Length: 100
Length: 148
Image (cartoon, rainbow over all chains, first blue to last red; front, side, top):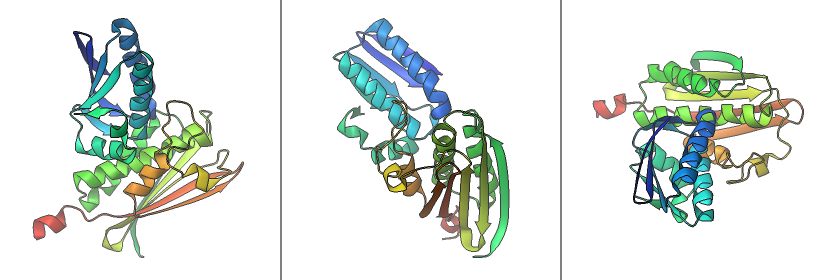
């Protein structure tokens, strides 16, 4: 489940609940649908309301990074809880996306 | 190591059961009064191991996943997750960071995370007969900090 807002070609998506292999498929479909609908220059993913995240979250970010790159845009991650940033550090995601 | 408590759970390898398995393991281990970080680590390693059974062991076909959680004296725990799926032909390759035989929804980071969040990990696999992952971890719990 997600909430989102669009302003001046910035799409901010707040992910709600848990990110695992089971939920990631639905999250991917929802986020990619919004990206195609609004063609943002920047996709901001807000993790403040994520209460669980495993390696499926890494794949979710990498996939959205590839999609936004192919469209000439970028991805930024904001408000990462400690457990999420710990997992993302293991994959060194900050090499590819801005983490605010 | 002397075992003081244990539980075993057998469930169908459906992705909806990934959260059931990790929450069950965390609930059972609550008796050790783990910190929030320890709970997050336990839930994450269980989630990775169970997802591997479903995605790789059974390739999204039906099959049973077995999870055993043991508590030993001194706050040591052991989590064993096994399937009777297709097995891993090359374990070192499967454990290499970013290696995956899965689709673009998989990052290939499952084993790296299991290694990072447990003190010891052992993988046994026989092609065509299944895979067992055994992880050991020390749970210090919150008691140590409040007693200090």
